[in-house]
Every structure is written in structure tokens, then in C-alpha cells.
Image 1 (cartoon, rainbow, N blue to C red):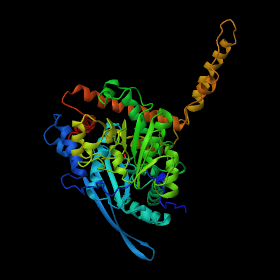
Image 2: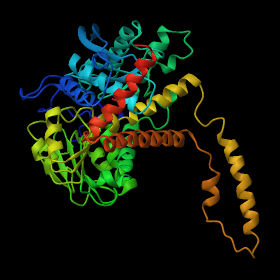
Image 3: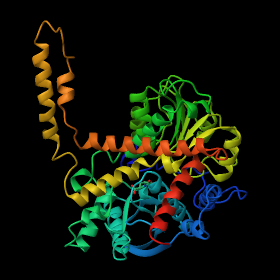
Image 4: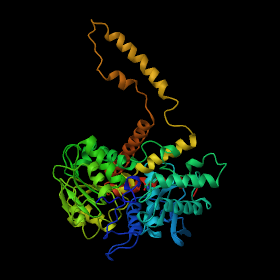
Length: 503
Ligand code: GLU
């Protein structure tokens, strides 16, 4: 029998793989550990200790400006069901504020506030001109039909939009765990219905489908960003040396936790384009391991058909999925929930390099243990910033009302043609003995389209941001890890914009 998931993770921004044992918000099974929001605060404080900020500024930056809680009823299946949602605005040092909307049963105020804070530092780090925000709705999207989700989403969007918590100039949501293009299209439409004369209505939300004002390359942007982040890391031999790894990405054994939108795209691109080997995939019902490597496409296809990884042929199935976080590999990519690497398992992690594709997958205590073990962590606020970076491009596209490349492309091609014609003329001269490579003409002539421009912008952003973190890491001898370095860069930029405002 083929079981079809009513909720298709292919459309969700982040992974939708809630593990039973995972930390959510401030709710931890292990009471010895602080919750997610405290974890972010601890990481912030560790970075601030290296900075010389004017009195009170660190507190102003750290504090979450506001969190709006909404409780609304929707008539579903003959009765009124009440939903609880949040939109938290962490910092308005730049506006609009930016951050996804998450649909998950465990969403709470602490979680959205922690995620909103991360958005502030993330946006500053990758130089997207936004403050930080995040939203969440407590519900399990798998339990609802599509038309029900539309009703719920539209009502939530209405509640937020009428308070300017969805607004192209003030607060621009995007997809996050449990939401995707479909929800963003409903939100955009709801906003447009409420603001019929707003010419920039489409810029009220990002991550929309292409036919509703979206941009090419947004769906895979976070996974693509993880790939670009790793590529840039491997371009820094001194940094790679700290992991003990040799060579480039080719042949590296990678374990991915969560094959949602981010984990899937990261694994797919790293395998197909960088020759990495996906030796482990952890999902909610268990994990798959294979020394020869797994193909994320076939595994994903299997998950779509059966609801999990169990029964997948050609790989060993491990019932206790989280134990695979501890297997020997070169790179570990947690791409699901927060708190999956915590005080209970940090000591058993064997990967020398971890890249945080999810937000907050490593708790502050685990971070400390991993640092002592000299494990290098490429932190979330940098590693998963590809999503918001391409969201920025989408927002700019919506505000400029024109697709990237539309004006220049043919002009560039005409220019390139001049050169090609001249080269062809010269290579016709037998005495010179020149010959053009067979595909040179077609490749050189092709002007950049929207997707190429998005990729180029994302690559440039990920390279630039890593360079600034790495520089900080090497320049300050008392900074021992990339996370602190990344926070320092982000906080300094937020502080600079507060100073510019005269605060
Ligand atoms: N939800 C994504 C994140 O956590 C994207 C946010 C956005 O594009 O605004 O970074």
C-alpha cells in the first residue's frame, strides 16, 4: 500500500522532522539545559564580552522589542477551532523587519523570540537591510486539508496585516518550517485584498511562487547557501586545517539530519556538484546509512511515497535515528530542529566539522563541549542565511516591478557577439592557427538570466560574509570559534546602525 503524505515537505522551507526527544523553545527534556531563547542570549553575551559597546547598548540590542500574540477562531469541520499565533519583532534598527513564519505544534513565544533574535544578527551578517522578526502558528499542518490551511493562513495573515505585522515597508514574512510557497501566496493575496491600492503589495512577503511575484532560486536558496558556505570554508586552508580534514569537498562523508527543503537541497547539490558522499540521512522514523553514498533524490521520493525512510533499499536502516548523529563522518549537517545536539549527545559527536543548516540545532552547553573537542562549527546565523539573502532579492524585485536581467540580457549578448565575431574572423586565418573551443560561442554569448543572477548574488554574499567572520576569528586571538566571530560581526553592524540613528 502506498501512503501519501497530506503535507508535502517539498514545499516547506525548513525541515519538518520533529523528533520526539528534541528541544523546542524553552521546553527541554533535560532540565540542566537552558532553553532556546536563553541559548541565543548566552551566545550573544559571549560575543558582546569581546566588544566595547557604549553602556546599555548591548542590552538594547539583545532585548526583543515586541511579541504580538493572536488567538483567533476558524470554523472547520462544523465547529470553531481556536489557533494561537505569534509575530515577534526583535530589532527595528532597520525596517522592514524580516523573518519566516513557522507552522508547528510546539511553537511558543520563547521559540519565536529566539528565532527573531537570530534573524537580526543573520541579516546584519549577510548585509540584507532588515531588522529581525519571526512568526509562528501552533498547528500541525499535516492534520489539515489544503482548503482548511488556506482558511487558517488567510485569517492569521489578516490579523497580522491589520497591525502592520505584514507590510512591505515594515514587516516582511517568509517561509519557515512547515510553510512554503503555497502559504506565502495566500498571505500575499490576503494582504493585496486588504490593501487594494498598495502598488508594492507583492513585497509584503517573500518566498512566493514564481507566478505570484516570486523569484527563481528562492526554494532551494537556503540549501544552496549551505553549499556555498562550505565551498567558501574550504577555500580557507587555515580554517580547514583546524578540522584536521584534508583536500576539498570531493569525497567527503556527509551526514544530513532532516531531508526537508534545506537538508535535501544541500545534500543534493553537494553530492551532484561537489562530489561529496552522503553517508547518512536521519529522518523522523529512523536513519539510513551507506558507506558508498545515498542519492537524496531517491530517498526523498521514497519518503514521499511511504512517509519515512524505513524500508528503503540499498542502505542500512537504523531505528534510533539520532544515534547516527554520532557516527564517524567528515561533515555533519543538522538541518531540522533546534537543540538536536545537546548536553546528552555532544560528547559523542565525531564529525570534525558541523554546519548548522537549521536554526539553533546546537545548544549553548553542547557548543561548549564541542569547542573543547576542537570541533569546528559553521554557525546557523551564517550557514542558513541563503534563504533570507534570496528573500532580499525577491523583495527588491517586487519593489522594482521588473525581473532581474530583463533590461541587460540581450544587450550583454550583443556585446559578447562583437567579440565572438572578431575571434571567429581571427581563427579563420589559418596562419594564426587559432581554434575556438566547441562550446565557447554558446557559453560566452549567453547573457545572465534571473536564476544566474540570483546564484551570483547569493554566492557573493556567502563568500563575503564568511570572509568577514574568518577575518574576525583570526584577528582576535581570544575568539576561539566561528560562532562568536559571526555574532561579533553581526552585533557590531547592528550597533553601528543604532549609533547612526543617534541612539
Ligand atoms: N525562514 C528563513 C530563515 O530562518 C528565511 C527568512 C526570510 O527569508 O525572511 O532564515
